[in-house]
Each structure stands twice: as C-alpha cells, then as structure tokens.
Amino acid sequence: MSLNKKSVDDFSAKGKRVLVRCDFNVPLKNGEITDETRIVAALPTIKKLMNDGGKVILCSHLGKVKEGPNEKESLAPVAKRLSEKLGKEVKFIPDYTVTGEAATKAVEAMNEGDVILLQNTRFRMEEETKPAKAGEKFAEELAALCDDYVCDAFGSSHRAHASVSVVTKYVRAKGGNCAVGYLMQKEIDFLGNAVENPVRPFVAILGGAKVADKLNVIDNLLEKADTLIIGGGMAFTFLKAQGYEIGKSLVDDEKIDYCKEMMAKAEKLGKKLLLPIDTTVAAGFPDPIDGPVEVSVVSSNAIPADKEGLDIGPKTAELFADAVKSAKTVVWNGPMGVFENPTLAKGTLSVAQALADASATTIIGGGDSAAAVNQMGLADKMSHISTGGGASLEFLEGKELPGVYAADNR
Image (cartoon, rainbow, N blue to C red; front, side):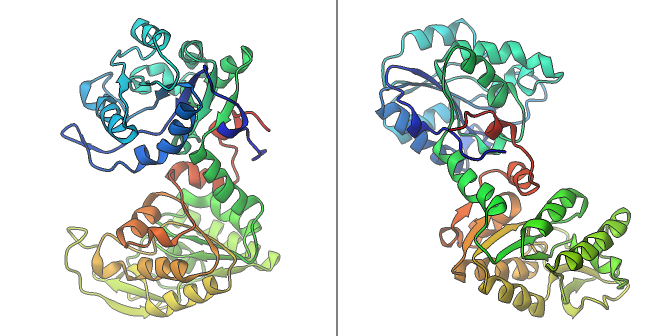
C-alpha cells in the first residue's frame, strides 16, 4: 500500500465545499461528552480548511446504532462542543436521513469559512455497506454535497464504509480531490512507516488477553521487528507451548501449535522473541476488577496449579525495559496484565515508564495501551499515541486500510 497520500496541504479549499469524515465517536453520559480527545484531534484539519476559505461539511458516526436513529446517539452535543472550540457556530443538521433536503439547503447557504455537521452517518443503515452494494447510494448522496473529500477518521479507516472509502469513487469521478487530514497523516507517518520502514533496532511489544486476536500481528511483526516482546494474557499460551505449567492462567489451547510455529520462525529469522521469566499470580481474577487482591511472584516456568498469572513479574519488567533501552523505534500494543487493578498494573506501568525514558521513537498502538499511558500520566512522553485501536492493529498486521487506500496518491 502506498503511504504517500495527498493531504490537505496539497490543494486549496478556497470557495470549495469540502466533506470531512471525522471520528467523533465520543463517550456520552446523559447527553454530555465525557472525553473530548477525538474532537480536539480533529481541530487542526478543520481550522486549516476554514482558514483556506473552504465550506466545511463534517460527518461522523457515533456509537453502534443498533436500534435505528435515536436522540441518544445524535451528534448534536458534538456540534455544540465544536462551536465552543472553534469560536464559531457549527450549524448542526439534525435530519436522520443525513443527506436529505435540510443538508442540501444548508450546504447551498454556506459562505466561505462556514462549518456544518451532518447527523450520525450510522443513522443510515447503508453506511456500513452490508451487502457491499447497499452503500453506493448513500456514498453518492454524500459526494453530491461536496467538491472535495478529506478523511481524518483513522479510528474508522479499517472499515470500508460509505463515508470512509466508497464516497471517494464519486468525488473522484467529478474531478474532486480525495485527501487525508492531519490526524490521518500523523498515523500514516508514525504507525505505517514504523512497520514498513523503521529506524533500527525496532522493538515491538504485544500484550492483551488472547493470541487469537493478534495472530497476523505476531506473524507480520516477527518479519519486521528485530525484537518481539510478548506479555499479557497471550504470553501464557506461548509458555504452555514451551511445556511449562501455567496453572489457571488464560490460555488459547487451539493456538499452542501456532505459538510453537512462531517461536521456530523467530529462531529461523534470527529474531529475539522475549517472553516473561517471572509472573505475578493470584488465587483468581479480582472481583471487582479493581478490588484488593493477594499476589505473589513465581518463576514463569513453574506457576502453581491453583494460581492464575495476572501480570508480569519484576525480573520480566527489567528484561523488557533493557530491550527498549537500545531501540530506535518501539511500537507497543496491549497491556502486560490486568492494568485496571492497581496491584496488577505494575508490569504495564514499568513498560510505559521504559518507553517514556527511551530515546527511541515510541508509538502506542491505541486501545488499552493508550488508556494505560494516559491513566499513568505518561502520554506527553510518547512520540505518538494512535487514535484507533482496531485500525492500529490492522496497520501492524500489514493490512491495507480502506480509508487510507482510498485517498489519492501524491
């Protein structure tokens, strides 16, 4: 996949109607936004197009919309917050059809520098393009509202949805630009290039619960990275594949042969594959998840039959930190243990701290790792924190992301 994409800096938006696909999938409680990170992340692209004299039409999904259009998943609160952030009214089009007469009229009445926000794209069932042809009409209606299109929704870029990738076909057909915004560009620069063209030594750290969730990521990163570190729940399947006793720890029994293959592949390629050498164990999973839990540390090759591994131990934390010290590029996706519990967060914290102290380019691949780094107050010490969990993982798998692929090449 070509990663050299046309960006908002490569064309002039003056007088043009520009449709921008954002990721405004923000958490809401009683109609109030509880975390505005995604709104703030979209501002640089929106401001650039406004300052150029563009007529900026924003669209996004919000939530899963399982029961059809409803006010709880309306984008109205986002329009309100955006207006405050931009110091200018962002006109909201509450029409559940998204692209109906209200939207058409609002776009016709726009002046240069104006901003409008369309209703939740998932209020149109065709957004998710199942079956594939269903999204064509919606994509064509979206394209009819604009002259140019900008995708700045990395968190949705792994989905071939009408407003993410199908729309580009219709914008391009009438001679419009299909570009990426600043947020997408940053993700491509950091995540895409870290995997495709890393400054070495390149260390990749994978955690999280299951091997099954990261099969292709492990396979791809073994070929790309110099050292692959595996922690979290997924490490126990590797330990069992080595013939070790893992007690009541989480295991993917169906993936034991796969783990053996991956260890053999690492050896054949001359890559380092680091696994935990000691483990923090408890009698069982904490309930509630953040409740008190009695723990002890044991060797990873001798976990007692009545214990469950819930975090890496201090020797492992040191081993992983040492591997990071000499790296030039580090990508991390997935916690080292049950980081939601203060007693079981030490492994994840030690990895986060090692990255914060490193002189390498450090990239956090979204999801729980991003949450952990933010929670630990180390976000400003990282080179880049990805805004998309699923999209980041697919990038790390080496997959072609529809939202990136659909943009024009430079």
